[in-house]
Image (cartoon, rainbow, N blue to C red; front, top):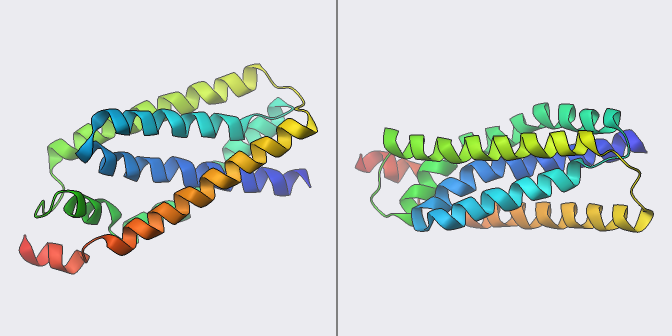
Length: 169
């Protein structure tokens, strides 16, 4: 049961992490503060999902989350999420600029640093959670992941087609 639970939690962590990279870019078009708050929230969720009863389980979840990020990243690449999101938020934006990519990379660095701090915190304080705490943690993780996936799918359906964006540029 533990390997299955660890894999599910790792998948939730992967979805949260990769989605945050793209959603912060969209949110920063409207409000940088909102993008930073979303980054902090994602790192907090990621840390809660990472907490375990032993260091081995913490490392297992972290190691499993790394390759599980790849299919999530492929979804965002194949749907051209970043370019379509920017053109939805800022009509007529066109392709991503180097300056915009640099600003977005700062939020990615912040997210990675916060998640690394979460990993260190989970490694420093491994303890067996109570069954009630474990159920709440799983519920929060599953709920946040379902909301995140639903938001991404809903937003993707609202974005302008990629071909129309490229044709304008």
